[in-house]
Length: 438
Image (cartoon, rainbow, N blue to C red; front, side, top):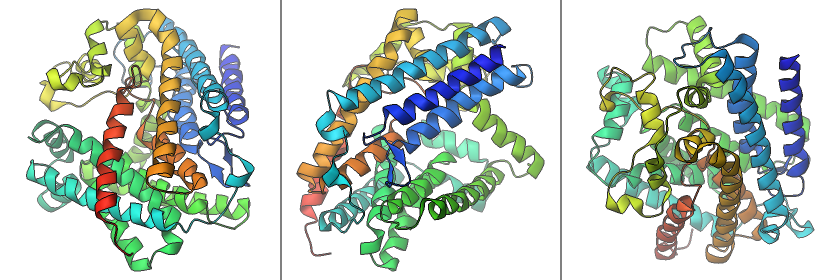
């Protein structure tokens, strides 16, 4: 009976998302080539709801867990689903009201071709800035983790942690590299019809190298998906053919994940890989919030990481790092483990208890829409992209770079808005400096 109720709640969430996002730039419709909410849908249902369903169907005993009990599991599942409903509802409502002018599609926006010269210039600027940051990152001590692991046989996890703990440069370099390879992959897909094949290949080679640099698996798959979603806007095929191409991309992504995983775990057999993927997709992205509502970490000091410019006064406590420290990293030195995937309500509980848990989806949804609104305006007014293209790019780029499966991530008091504003300010300098004939 309980599992049936959970299924019904998940179905209701899907209906709320598809109907609530209809007409907004987050609408998901292959027929209209509007997929701005695809990455939101993927994150919510593949990385969060799927984990809830697996925990409810199988139980926590089949997995490596630490503090979860039957009572905490039942409570947490309901809290997650309610908060997802609040998050989806906030994004839908805000898009239709406060930010209606930039976050809703209009009839004049329904165009299928993207040939903007401004878009090509933006690709040039983002690529040059990405190369600049890659050089700065290498100068600060970053190593290409995958290439280093393959060539030297060094453990990939060791290289990943070294990139995070031993780099001497500004901490935001890695974050800005990530933003730029996501944006560039999407733009190249969108404007690939106006680019030479050689330029597309060279630019995407830089993008893939940047995505592979830290040693994480997800960014490599993400840039392929973003490239495809960019191309999707200009594909004139039927929804059936688009779906078939998407399935082919899914197959390619699966084998790419397999290759990357074998680099990290050379002795892993294919059957073990299937279980690994099942656990990572099933509970790997959401286990942290179940552990948090069982162990109940609490420290208001975590809120300091949400305050804009707080990093200027020292390093703030990281909730996801501490959560990993009381679970998988309990007997390890902090430099020997990373962070634990969760859901932002976990950190909200650690900061402000149940009150902030219930209000955090509203704060996060408002900040998320504020960021998308800002990026639409910047792309349209400063980089001169047509408004339809600015809306398409902003919805997908922010959905890729601002995620909900983690901590609050600067979405409580607007810190992420400032971070991205700085990114686009710097990118605008490269854009103006690179005003050459392409």
